[in-house]
Amino acid sequence: MSEALVETSAVINTYNRFPVTIVKGKGSYVWTDSNAKYLDYTSGIATCNLGHVPEKVQIKVKDQLDLLWHCSNLYDIPAQQELAQLLVDNSRFDKAFFCNSGAEANEAAIKIAKKYAKDHGNDQRVEIVTFSNSFHGRTGTTMAATAQAKIHEGFTPLTPGFRYLALNDPDALEVIDNGKTTAVLLELVQGEGGVNPVDSSWIKQLEAICKQHDILLMVDEIQTGMGRTGSLFAYEQFEIEPDVMTLAKGLGSGIVIGALIVKDSVAESFQPGTHGSTFGGNPIAMSAGIATIETMLDKDFLSNVKEKSEWFLGSLNELQESHSSIKEIRGLGLLIGVQMTSEAGTWITKFREKGILVLSAGSNVLRILPPLTTTKEELAQFIAIFQELLIENERI
Ligand SMILES: *Cc1c(COP(=O)(O)O)cnc(C)c1O
Image: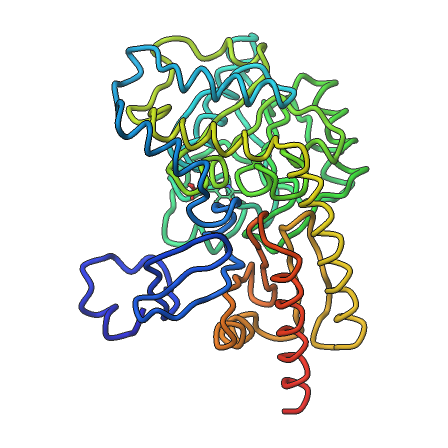
């Protein structure tokens, strides 16, 4: 968005918008109001995991649009039953609650963790542990759960009840159980915070401590879930069994949705009157979720994602070997961070000028989020352009 538009726009300026107006999308590509075409390796921030306007989801949502848009949660919604069943059948969890965004899913997780402590006679357990550089949302409470000072700035007093520890820090494990902790909430690969994966032995130890002290292990899979890391959910690859998981972004392929997924023992803490949402579990959103999961359960879908990821990460590592502007490659599946030696913003602009959209995560990290449906040719095109940009940069 141009500066002139920022000044005259009736929209509050909460985002530094790129000067690109997207009006159409299909598969891996988007088109602007002046019909310029871009390869979209942002996927609407890890949301359009099946690419733009995926046909199977489009058809299912259109069918639902002809039937019923909304009826409230005072009535049984068959599509909600179906999506909940699909989620529990394909995970280690037992029950789901639906809402409308990631922050709202985390709000539900935080609420149920507090209630779980009370229901188990642990009134003194009032704290939830989160980790530095996490991101859990922008509502009052999820902002407080987010352990980043820049996100808190100007919004004190914060919702109390969060204790921040350092990710992958062995010392953090020593202090998790202080008699006051009811739950630990974390991303298995921090998305907004810089594409930082948890250490696999550290998370196993964390899980053991949680199990030992009946502390709920809650994974925020809002960005890592729905195939993004190469498995349907990231926790599968870390071989852990969390008690609570939150989903949103990729679950509806771009249709508004969020979900809290829990074990039976945790689900009992929500009863009629304890939690709710007017739009949560709305039939249109549920249809999008059903068609999205069904697509990802197709026999070869996830193994294809893994294969593409391996090739892509391999090619990026090769680029790193010959170009010193790349400091480190991190990530899992198609959630990839490339730490540069200079400002990510400059690289984002260079990519855009070559027809590719990418994101940042922190000041020096390029975040690359191809749709999971991207082709090997598109990935190769990305690598070729990246190489061109790196060579150009070295000439300056
Ligand atoms: C995007 C995100 C959220 C917040 O989701 P919203 O839908 O924007 O509220 C929370 N946690 C993680 C890990 C995210 O990536």
